[in-house]
Length: 233
Image (cartoon, rainbow, N blue to C red; front, side, top):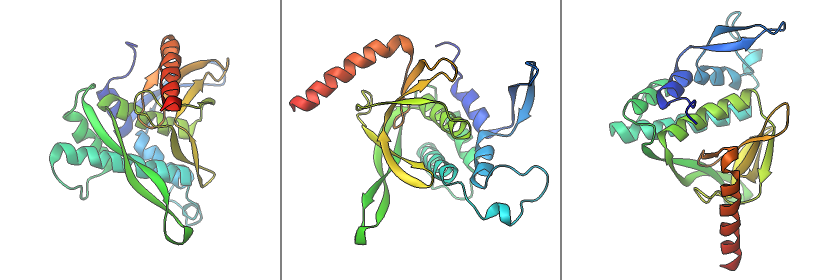
């Protein structure tokens, strides 16, 4: 897929104002200035941006749980990557600054290791979040995953579940927030076209690996092999 954005382009989209193409009601298109995706995500935590003036107290009372959880995830993962390349503990650095510093030391195919949260049973029946799931991926896949998750939070795409473990990382289920509640869902999913309903890609929500339609046959074959091995073992 030669038209995929590079790591540098993904980081610029995440951290800086940039041009986006919009379609008007009359069908015409134009490029307009957009905030960075990280800033848009921050705004979304409190119900969206308020360009007309200072935020009101009322606007700050309700937090978008999905946006908050996603921001927490991305900020933590960015801090992990920043610490890995600088050898320092993050202090007052912004998420954008950590992403930019990390990306400057990476190539698209550079291997990276990130953690994901899991929810376990704690004392007195309470759920406790622990960051103990280790995922191995590439710098490009990690940054692309950040972009995808933010864009799909803002404008969700239709999806279909794949009830199988990821052939890349082995994760079968992930926790996600729906209407303020943490639920388990299959890690693997199909992404559907909004108009036709056709599957445009298969994706692992854990490690961020993507398979395109020409790879679906290979994916199905590998899933079949892995599932048979799991049942036999």
